[in-house]
Image (cartoon, rainbow, N blue to C red; front, side, top):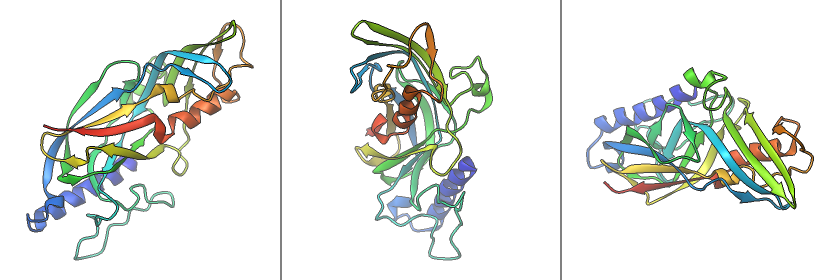
Length: 252
């Protein structure tokens, strides 16, 4: 449903663009590129004094929607005919905003690896100031227990140390499909304008994931970060925080 809604948004915008004067530059179709990049090595020191070092940090990323500034009219409200309904679960998944670029696939992104170029995507010419990252359920090969996230939305492995204590941990996280829980909204975009040849670069910062974790109650062996543990709860908040993401545009 999320993919269909996003596709309808951009498709309607592109259709409208072909029906109006080319002087309305906000509606001119373009081809831009999308890339993902890690923002840190995953190391963090928590408020309770734990030093966290991640050795694995993989996240299923996508869809991604890049929005025009709020003051611009939404492309799905043309000067003729009824507007398209975007209802989904009692909320508007696109926030009633003009979508200038979207990525509808899903990538298992190694947040400790290198930059990944996702290739060309369709878009609309003009300014963007925010984007949303959807942390959707695993699809295709990503559903496999042997996959990069072991069938979860995200997977981590690492070591936490404090004053001679060492906790080795691993685990996956699953985000239920309720309301906006799977959406990270309000990620600011630096640079601002989309045009042919521009690359939209989305950054993921794994150091934010467990920056509020307390490993005090985890001891011995390899600890699994189950839902009943404080680090798991901290991770759920960290991976869904806009502070764990960034976005910028690079010129052609």
